[in-house]
Length: 151
Image 1 (cartoon, rainbow, N blue to C red):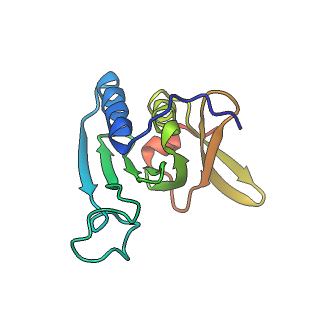
Image 2 (cartoon, rainbow, N blue to C red):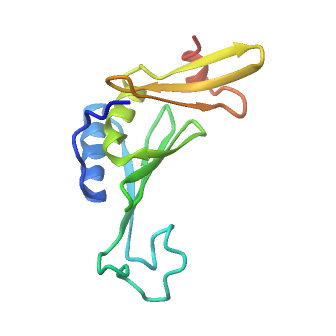
């Protein structure tokens, strides 16, 4: 798997890239920032009012909701990865650097639904530049946006 994505060193740089993409596709967005070890979701063991990590860094996590269709949320973690949900289909552990390309594929019409009759199943497939592809099984029924992308 190749990684030719521009490097996004911080959560804020990733949020800035998502804002630029939202402006390009004329999408509304809402951003919620959680800053500090006592506020980020993966630091539940942090003591009350413990803001810094043990290494002295200040963790920053952001939750971004993009207007749809499709309904998309992006949770950016301080550990250089993200969780992206598209129409209820969750993609965990997407590298932070790949988030803009992932969203460009979704909003640019490259994402599609792959179906198989035996054994039965449906997957949301999100191709990125190069040979990088993300796919996750669709658990429930297809939303109108997902149904348009069936191949």
